[in-house]
Image 1: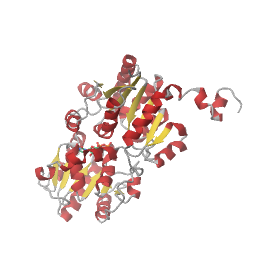
Image 2: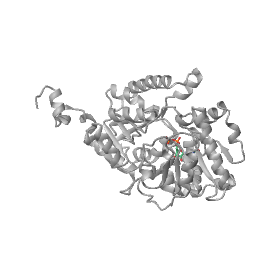
Image 3: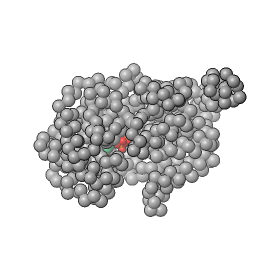
Image 4: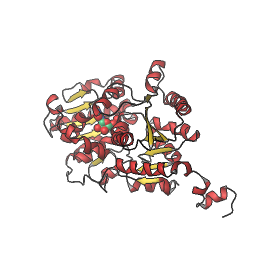
Length: 405
Ligand code: UDP
């Protein structure tokens, strides 16, 4: 009978994509040691972004849904302040009812900000994707990354570089483990389903004869001029290459394109606009596209893995390893014509990069996290990782406790 209660608290679609294998491992192989409760914060709630999406992936439904997004929609308030406040309240209630032994998060969404409440409650925090830094203080996600990393008891980083960044910020070495990037597990495991997708036929596309794009980040869609520049550059480039652009649009992107009066650009015959697509279809499009243009964090990694050059349509990235590998080009500064120039550069890039650089040691990153978690649970690591005995090797800690070392 498991005597360690672990809550995994996730909020958005890509969280589930990345975590699917680890969730399965904990549920199935870990059940003697861990009682696992999967909780959805409700940050994403549209059926196409959540319910249908995880059903298609064969991920189990969460045990609990904190319903943040829907409640805010009903209340007509959608600021991040209202979101964070509601999430904090609901996470607090959840902690009161469940009394977990640890709460596990992934990534840099607003959902991870509730780790403040978890840590304040005295419950250990676990963070996957630790140490990602864009050093771009304008990004909402950068604040989330820093908050959760510094509150976490156990941190799992994708690559040694991420761990180095954490150590430079003063995070204790013994808390951080490098595991490789867990997106590799998702892509590898699901490739047969991806190959079976009929999306090329459905959208009347030919392999390597279209461009795939995605824009949904705040920096791109909340300013009309920036959004217009990006859409205009993409349209111009695609028209010159005589290739269609497939554009699955997130609800927030649609709303902003309409608000800024830019639907005309997308309604031109160059664009094939769709709703957010299922993961298997989307990954197939990533694999078959001649070029990807996206502001997503995950898509730049997936482009590298499936062998398609990708322009990161952002000012900065917390994942520069994809640039160093020669698989992506960062747009960088905003401005008319910048994206067009970077698309030209990416178009001519050789596609011979090492597709394994995100998981250089091979094997399964999710399995590494699982093995480490089980070892920590069995050795009571979470009960002692903040104790004086554990920390007193550090002279700064000894001094704070009255020692003069
Ligand atoms: N994705 C998808 N359907 C789409 C667009 C994206 O399944 O229409 C997948 C994509 O393959 C990747 C993830 O969703 O795995 C990226 O999500 P998003 O860009 O929302 O998040 P980010 O990685 O930027 O946090």
